[in-house]
Length: 445
Image (cartoon, rainbow, N blue to C red; front, side, top):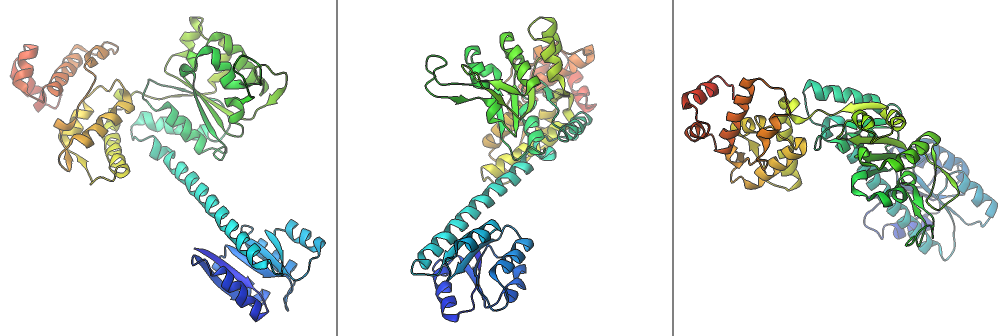
């Protein structure tokens, strides 16, 4: 509902305007016969004010000044029997939204103006709400869930990242949430009102990557029928996120380095230097220093991109976060799909906590969402938890574990695979079932 003030000292004309405005039942109308009376009621927070320029106690210009000093976002429509262009221009410069002359067309013009204002306000409010939702969504405590020491350290780095425009390099295995971290930095920084432009360097063929990043001029190559603006320009006043940066062909790396240093670029086929103003965040699941040693990545670009390095830990190194994340994903899935409340049983949480998760947080989310679909009750049990990766034990060889830890992992893996059937697992591994029972009793599994 739009709240509208009508300020008019002529009773008949006031009734006419009131009738016109109230044709829309969503308009809430308040009428005042003097400037002071209206000013004393500004605490009601009107959206729109129709203001007669000639009132007995104050001039329209004086009242407009009071309104704008109280709240510059209030829309003021000036109504006058005069057609003085100079007065109209001055009022518009001082913040009036429109100046309408009282004549036979006043009714239609006033209705159109108010409708335009309400439509614009709706769009502004929706955009504001969307940005607030984005801010909440990418707030560190909401977007990157966890309570482990390793993830808390990531939070401290992200807090430092949002205070300046320093380049941020995010490292981590696939599925650890690198893009989520980049969005959290962007939407909590001073550039949050600007665009967030993600580019997956591995998904774009090398021959198209330069045009994709820098843009091109019409006719610069076969098929270039129009000018194209590149990602660097699209990210102006915002953030450019270059994911999988290590996949970029070395021939393009020198051009990227120049753009980062000079803060300007030339579109493919163009001679004009275009200034850019965007923050750059890069991410990779490789060790860039090793790529430099191998000759796959320019050393000068490596140091230019290093900036503030953020290492996202794999899920296996923050196992205490698995129950927290799992509950978060259940609640999120229930809310988004309008389901009845679900909860995870202790056995289901234990099964999740003992799994290796080579796909990291992304895999955990997929497993939990599948469990929400598969369960036939309000409680998700261990039987609803299904893992797709049958090659998990091979991943253990990447870690330096004791023989006892390898044994514990292997037994836990087979217990998960055979639904905690101790006899079956004992037969499969050719060990005594008493050994498994003892390890379960001692909470070693």
